[in-house]
Length: 113
Length: 111
Image (cartoon, rainbow over all chains, first blue to last red; front, side, top):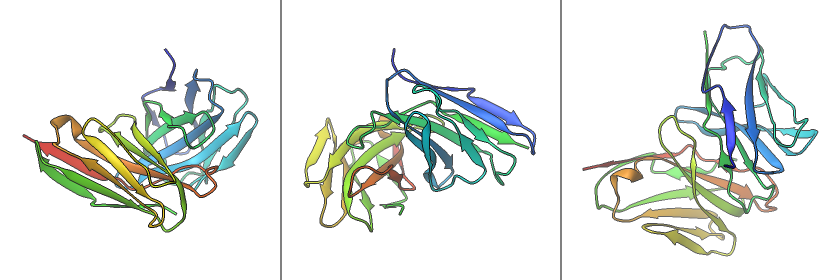
């Protein structure tokens, strides 16, 4: 079955630690995205990548980093510089053109204490 | 810029109709609509491209007014399963920029 997987579903970390969220897709999509969701805020774009070895900052990139070494993988690192990292993180992909739907992964809920 | 959705929340009884609006201050290439259940991934409903077309399936349809930079989602004869948060995502005029999502409209359907 084709789709997007994110792991883990729940993640707990201590303040000051970096943490990496996994996102893998087997849809052969060129474009991948990371969103952050907070209550009442909708989906806010963190980073996106339209091709391997290239990525761009979204609206709220500060305190986050990404890599795109393989077409199917787009991991997100939440660094200690992110002031308020507790949130629901969603990964998405699409073929690369915005006339196509975005496919979302199941999400990772990160709690930092 | 983030599109503005209205209303922020709505409560319906089963069988009632609802309209959710999405407005942008920028020229639009496309509008996407998604529904999200709490704690789950958003699920794609439909995409509308510039040209003012209307789309729909079953009892959920949508329109896109390119000149007004607005889209509306129509839910008719609502069912309990329609409950969730509805998001519109808009793409700029070139169609080659990432979607920008609105803050969402929380829809609750009660028996």
